[in-house]
Image 1 (tube, rainbow, N blue to C red):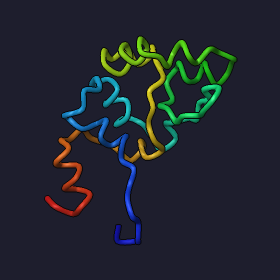
Image 2 (cartoon, one colour; image 1 turned 180 degrees about the horizontal axis):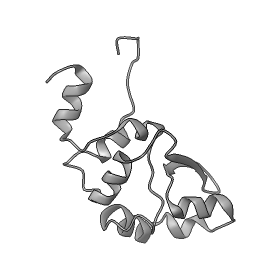
Image 3 (spheres, one colour; image 1 turned 60 degrees about the horizontal axis):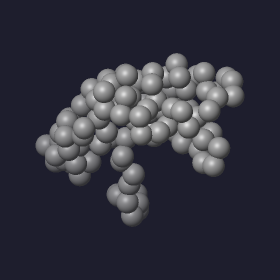
Length: 115
């Protein structure tokens, strides 16, 4: 904001918030990434940035039906139950900068310079 931004996108950071229902495996995977830990995945009609998991590696290296890994069943298995190899896990490029799991209040306080 000090540089003139009118807003920020912080969805990935809030996935790692303690209040978020995302499984701890999803959260930990984000916090363990390096700055090259995400990839763009073509989903036929759109593209998403996702965690670079073995599943994403397979999708990138061979033609696969991404619909089978980005539907309600895959989301339930991977995002909620923690089987990170069952589905595509969206995450922004900033993932490599996220190193801890904190409350939403702590995340906001850190952003606005509070303690």
